[in-house]
Amino acid sequence: MTPRMRLQPEAMGSGLTSQRVRDRLVERLRANGIADERVLEAVRLVPRHLFVDEALATRAYEDTALPIGHGQTISQPWVVARMTELLLQVDPRKVLEVGTGSGYQAAILAALGLEVHTVERIGDLLRSARKRFRQLGLNVRSKHDDGRLGWEENGPYDAIIVTAAAPALVQGLAGQLAPGGMLVAPVGSASAQNLIVLERDRGGTLSQRELEAVVFVPLLPGLVD
Picture 1 (cartoon, rainbow, N blue to C red):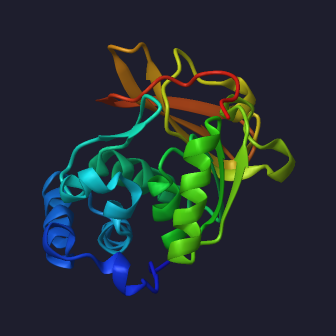
Picture 2: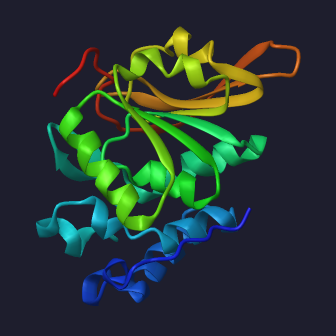
């Protein structure tokens, strides 16, 4: 699984969004424990500056979350890389993302050659993300819906990634996980969250483990146009 993207010239960036700046971010992620070279190459290739407001483009390759409007954020690159690295442990083919947001996490997954299905409750964010997918030539399937419901008709999924935090794992999402699959989600309160990994073995038995502390926006119900 080697990331491959054909970028338009405007996606390559210049100055504070140049390939050299992206390379420095990749080295920072490697120094902070991201070891999967496939993930690092995807981070190198996907132009994060296209997924933030133009006024924030010069900060796009900092290892930090940034606002994208509607009270949402584009996740910190280290967190995106960490969650992606975890999912790749089960060698997935089809992935469900809950919470499209800017579209950056979905773009990383698609750049890895995965079949990506993503659900977003805020229509304005989803429309912007779809434009970015088209601009980059990424085949990402998306839906405007309450992400807590998942996308059952296209399941089951080899991997599920949740990019907003709930007080507990959403059981409806766990039910869409294929045997041998993995779900990664932030779980906890607004002030204390951890990454939770839920795995379903080939026999259908679920097991759960808790990893490092993270900070995500809340997983909310309903739709926003």
